[in-house]
Image 1 (cartoon, rainbow, N blue to C red):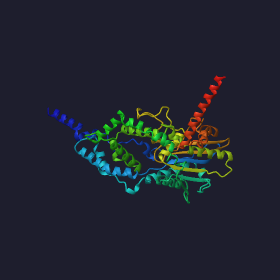
Image 2: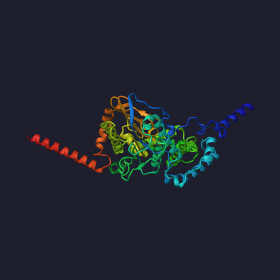
Image 3: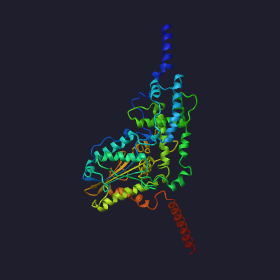
Image 4: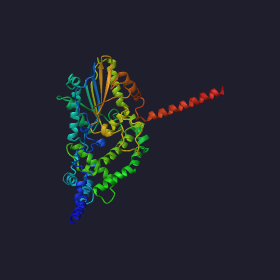
Length: 471
């Protein structure tokens, strides 16, 4: 009887209280933690580290064109204030919950939150680039230089005749441009051009009147995200996190999303460390939150509305115009051979959509399964320091074009091979560039003219029909 009683006690001890620690999953000791954090994914976790030389048979690279998002940054002063005010209170409650044996965090995760869960964000960090962010752009440039060593070595010193750097008027973009330039050019002064007020090239999405009036002000952007946060999937995630952290009441979605933000910010700031705040989520929870942001960006900057990405045509026009100039002049006249643009995430995502990249067959909607395969995934094309690059080659038979997204070669459906012919590439994007001057997606008069023209056509058809019937 004694042995049976001891076995029973041991079993109870193993499945409750301290013994339950052995049955819990610990984020701290997870050998493969989930690393995809949508637009705040660290670039060094998803980039292509292979910097070996790229060769195209019978071809020579003659132009390198790139647009990139800024590197990892600190939050805005507004967000930092909210975090420093709210997160210490949540941390204190979570630790108290554990002492009172509520919640399912393992002891290692509790220790991590207790020892390393404080929020250290100085007031003057407002959206500045972090050391990790500067490093992301520096090594990105070095990898591209390694892949196209002959191209960059043929003109190793910076000069405005051959190279052009342009960034929006923000510290993260300026710092990113500076860091990238130092990875391309090891010495000498490098001139960076700041986009002026009203810039329509790299800051095209700022003050886009037509988009604001026809999309934003009509409340078309928040519908899918609102429905998603009311869905069973999101509410179950909220309940799951609430239980894991030991709260006796339902957490607010704002609190959960704030914890999610500090989790992914800290992972981006300290690549080799594990943020103790990430212990609040399982991998499935993180997939749900990742999908939520993908859904939001899809409808705010992506394919959810045509005007979201129509306004990115100035970048396409710039690219196509430069490619055509090389073809027309056969490289004999002075052409800038290296063009580097630095913008924000919403600018890059709009450009990606304008290029027709990462387009799903079916639109992203609030009722989709978050874990389902999708092409519009910002973790893989809208992370910190994400980039799109285009390389123009002069080949023995013609000019050819190669496209890279986050340093991976992308095979356009419109091209027979990964190396597009000049004709294939221009057949695909030439009309976008040609029509941009008439309608750049932001000029409100373009829509008025189009509507007036359509009415004129209708009236003309009615007159013709009436005349025909009269006779």
